[in-house]
Length: 93
Image (tube, rainbow, N blue to C red; front, side, top):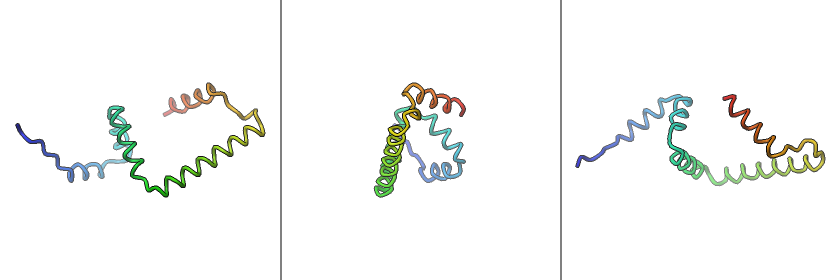
């Protein structure tokens, strides 16, 4: 049986030479399971102090929005309206 050899140095040079758009397009072409695994690995590579800072910022934003909805319920969106807005934005891409 022939051994499969991969020149990771060459692969890395090729990846570095790709535009962000081309790399993104290639990554989105991966099967879902591989994209999820890659996303998990990328997130795990983020420094813990950065994650804590971002998590805190999201918590503060969620608290702000909750207080805004409590103060003025007319700004609140139903789940259906919110999801429809996401779909409209996704379709624009």
